[in-house]
Amino acid sequence: MFLKPGFKLNQNVKVTNLDTNLSKIVKVNDTGPFDSYPGKDKNGKLIAIPYYPLRPRPGIDIDLSTKAYKAIGGTFTNGVPTLLKNVRIDSLP
Image (cartoon, rainbow, N blue to C red; front, top):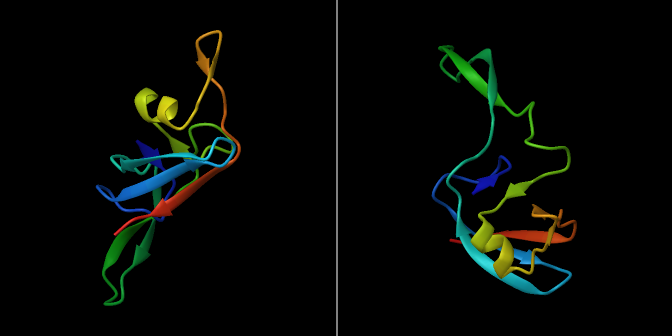
């Protein structure tokens, strides 16, 4: 599952479709396409600082597996997943 920055790899999150009130706990296994720019850490060492210039598609914050998508009530139109616009993502310990 891809998720926007701010979440850690292997972190569990609860994804809720607010239109159906169905939710699924999934594990973050990809934090998306990052790029970086040169910077310095607190000790002055040169490092690459990540930033997030690209998104898979505009407005997409999460990309679920088909199984998780169906579990929260996702539907398909002509075999293509319908964009869920009313989704909440909660971080779990």
